[in-house]
Image 1 (cartoon, rainbow, N blue to C red):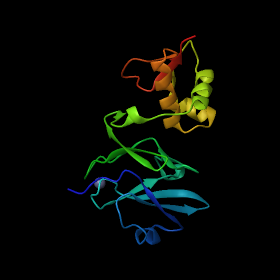
Image 2: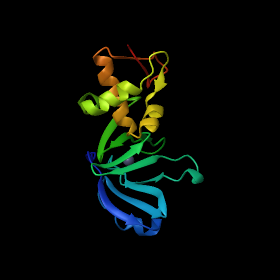
Image 3: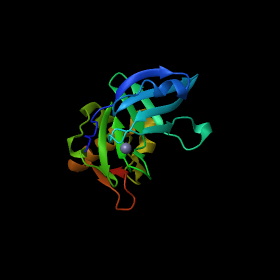
Image 4: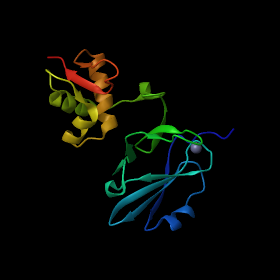
Length: 175
Ligand SMILES: [Zn+2]
């Protein structure tokens, strides 16, 4: 059994999908196809199956993911779930691959965000109704995984509360 990649390796930006294939050799290798703006993220499947995942980043071309390209690395939102073949399901956050089991990531207990982000999220959380972490992320201009983790940290400190299932990912502040 091949081992799963824990990180992605950025191999560059190209203008077309054909060129991308030649840049991918190992599990986790990533290429962005960009023409004016990011169109596709092509990822040699981090599970090790050898397939290339073609991830759409262009809303005009249908259901799209959002790719954050920052100093710490690349982040994809929402999680990627392949519903056929190898069935890979993972979160990409700052180049790190977190494998998912259902809604939760198996490594999410190792996630951590700074007090600064925690404070920003706390200040923005409403106290009379629940709000989804991705909506809050958009409002604050912060990577959604960071907002989610900030909410979890706040829940542990009894400063926020999570809504009941199946409304996963909804939080409100406790004043
Ligand atoms: Zn795979």
